[in-house]
Image (tube, rainbow, N blue to C red; front, side, top):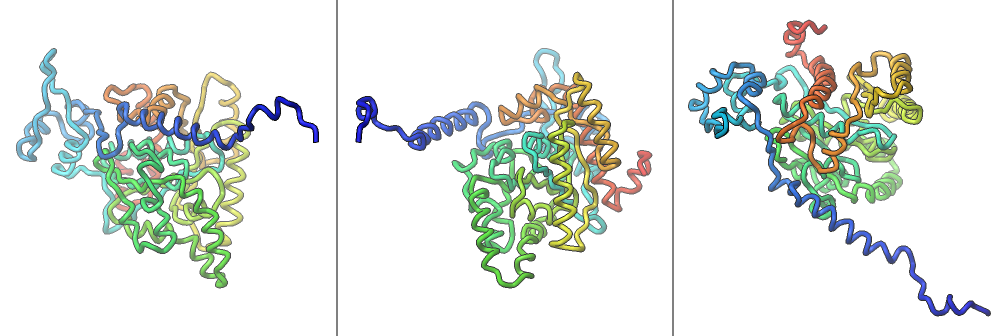
Length: 400
């Protein structure tokens, strides 16, 4: 058969053969990004310090009282700025020690309050799901709560934000997979400390995505219908083995319907649903609600959520269309949409690109923090309402 001479002289290059080089270059870049100040979790530090005034507000005591308590608690007095001789500030760990000493920690009462499992979930990608999860964890940690973050998304953005390079530093044995596969009886093996003194993490990696097919095959082999249904409860049971150590457990879920996503939905006590005030995002959120309504009840007819609430993200008040669509969301979702919105912010986006959140910047943008405090403060109230021991506190704050 006839073939042009140029086809015979130029060797064929398969696109897939280029992937090895692409992957090597890309992974090398990601590794360098982490090394440029975003070190692995064993080395990464929370560099933000809190001024005596900030610490006093966080602890609920005045600055003089904190200073007097330093020697009693064994806290090293903060260094002084040579330019103005003012104290530089306390670490979050020291603030926690003050809270412990003065009994102002916000922890739930173990006798009456249960840990709350909150799934940050929506099937629409690009709505700030992982960013919301990480920043909410930071907010709660600053307030003094004990937080466990569980990354179940194979993209592992949340894991990266806590200083790890997924797949290079995290393999499937460090994720929820060994428990879901029945090789572990608790999730203790997967829990690791982070550079935040009161945030623990169960990380993720690409193996979670690859596991979806294996899980489907596992379920298909189960002849007993009850055993199939029981599998969707596995993550819930796993979290129960470590939950007593925490006040809040945050689940970062995959942005698609799958076996792990359903496990997340079954394990959650509350659903935090990030959604932008745009038509496509709204439509996706409606589909998500339809799936939860139609399918979760079939898996477990007794399943209840303490609340299901939409958090409006990426909100740009320069666009009238977004303002109008936010009103549509409030009309359709009613009290199932938070009043506060997460404004579109270059600061948040740039921080995420550097694997650092706004709350941990050494010199944070106060305007951004105020916006985030307002957003997460409303979510915090929703959590406090679920703890009987906090009723007096909420009543004193005029919250029913």
